[in-house]
Length: 246
Image (cartoon, rainbow, N blue to C red; front, side):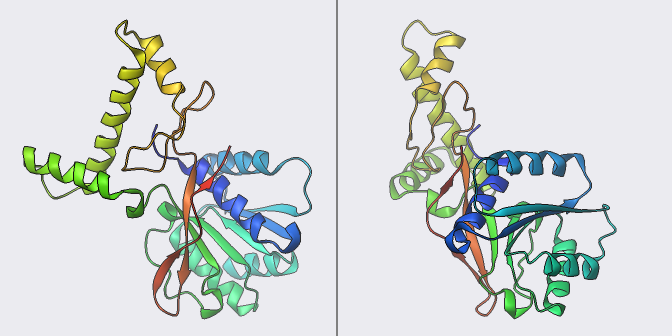
């Protein structure tokens, strides 16, 4: 794989939440509906956060499609949460933000962008620049050289203007395959190709974050880009560099 999945994005969000706690102390609450996929995300995050730590964690779940936003908001306020990793959908998050505002409690909110695809610019103003969203890729991943390479290919083969991100991902995959074939050498077979790709470290496609693979690493870009929601100006703002997870 080239891009991270939901698991890696959730881990990157949790890492950012902890990093922003003052002195590494505070409370991170994992919130999500009762669902097998969410179970897996929470387990992966808890494993990432296990070990010696100065912060505390708690998990709160709710029945799928039956979120009591007011009750959950009160629970988060009573838990004195500093950060909330929310793994539910758009409507649930919007309702929770209103509930938290009613409690005058404004923890950092961390969510996967694919789970909340619509802008959150109408959220209560107290959450301005306190809502963080993860993205597997951004337009800034594409360098000037990458843009020129794609444009040359597009012009030569009259590629359609739609589905640009899909085309960029396909070109990145082709470049990765080409690099693997080059590394495998003349005596090409499946094993040598896999070994060649496993040997790549921060391989620059010009179209994606740097890609690193290994015997136990099958995702090249492990982590996420994070953006925070500026409610006042109705825009999202990048948060630092790419957040790498292991």
